[in-house]
Length: 491
Image 1 (tube, rainbow, N blue to C red):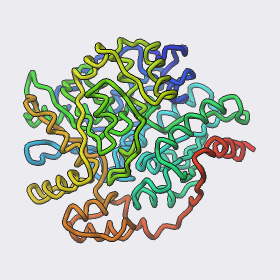
Image 2 (tube, one colour; image 1 turned 90 degrees about the vertical axis):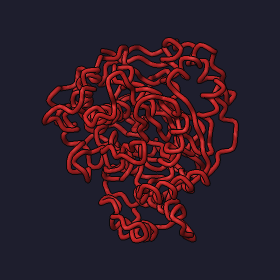
Image 3 (tube, rainbow, N blue to C red; image 1 turned 120 degrees about the vertical axis):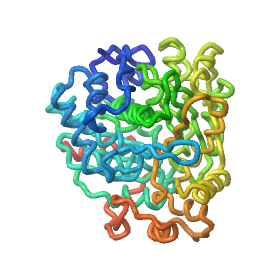
């Protein structure tokens, strides 16, 4: 099985090449030429099969050509002691719904589910292709991807990670996780700007530096433009469905519906991929904060980034250019790469595009949009805590509210919980009726005391670690900084 570009102007490549390249040469994103049938994985939890074993089965199906034993070892290493629960992604009943907890990894956010696996998958791909090359892995982050990528690639031979984050656009905990991360092969650089500017700078680096790097250095990405981010995310949708089947909450003929906090659209598209491979995935609610560009598109068919970015209490969704929507448009348009390329050109040159009616209808057959503001998120967090004794972060609260778009749908509702509330203690304390003066590293311990909960292992002692990455640059200097990193590494 080969991988194709969503813009149709690049040759098909192997899974290994797609993993290492990140994006296609024509600027498109890779998708498999066909989707294997994994419907047999929906039939409850197999006796003796743990999360790692399930992940290995998905990896083998979607990443052919990589060593089977290596994939099994990668899954076991990824989903092992780094997680604080053996179930990896537990499904918790809350009220009349279920919450899929994805925050039990080393950085307490859902990005760990992919970024504990991606480096190992890329290492396997490097062994198969050009092991003499070194890969400079570029990452733009709105908060959680940065620390998860740094943690995942930590001390991995042949790889160096350069993370760009908005200096004033992340929470205190997210900032500390990145700037205090040890490791000789990882760097975090703040930019004077927002996430979209960080993401744009990284894309420019790919376009401008491809042939201008030192010999032996190639660029790759740990962002969700890399298909290796989405493949591991498919696993937890399947795990949730298997668990629902086992406990009798998902009956024969029913489908499970998922509400997903969405910024860059990768997490929710992984759910679509699970459904495309035969899993009983129903409606997918794309839950946004006050930056409602995705909801507006799902309602109108017009994607328009020409608006002011709003800073919110859910900063990981403070995004106006949602990269992975391109993958859905490719599928919804009948894999018409030329149309996708034209839409993306319109977004780049004019700041907007409009899809045709047929494509929009195909999108809306399974996706709906919902947005809420900070006040609504805080109210939901407080209400769920008082009624159910369950504390969620503001991103998860957006998805909880997004369930409203699922009224009348038969089958269980699953809310994806994408981060620990301790990563956003300022918001959580406000939701519980307290009034912290500012967002700082004293708040997680205060929240633990107020709520009577334990800090996640990965966040303990964070305030005692030294700051190791204090560099801040203008967003226009990202390409120069990437070139400098490559030359320093191979100089």
